Length: 202
Image 1 (cartoon, one colour):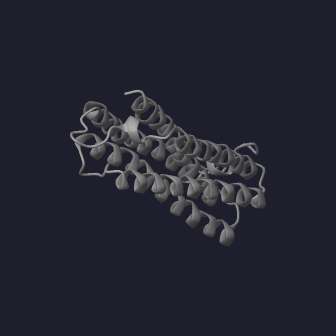
Image 2 (cartoon, one colour):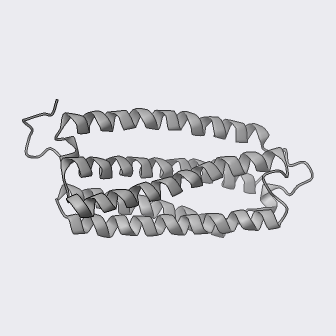
Image 3 (cartoon, one colour):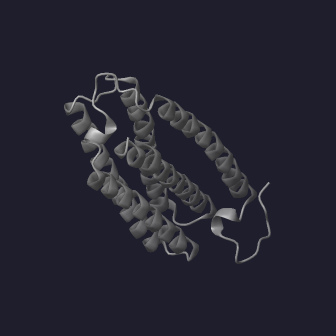
């Protein structure tokens, strides 16, 4: 049942019972995502050092490229937050501008990650090289796949925004997609620390 009364200060995405329940449901979904990535991190950490005859991470990891990826993704989290700020102020133009910048930064991140993967494979570190590199590609690749999914999802939401404007329904979708994007940034911080920084000192 839709709520018929709400405070004028209530954000659009929370103005209906459906919106509130969907947002709650998405938080529960993120709990399942945390379980997924926790499993991948645990597997990776167990297999650290098991490089067989392949190269080790310290031989291939380059801090400059990883820092660029980190800068792009964390900046995209900031711009995504600005999009929500403009949405709360009922500025459709502001939402489009800042989500557009968020998507551009996300695509830049994916471009650097694909380049990184291709470089590793050319250097002899592929998915089948060793247990370590299998765990690496599955963990980092799963995160990259989530970023790709997020970009496609947000593009579809932008199409709906163009057609319908800012409504409780479209605002809910924008807000939920922002939660997803911030979640991926948090996961990347763990990847940056546990995979790259730790791998460089192994």
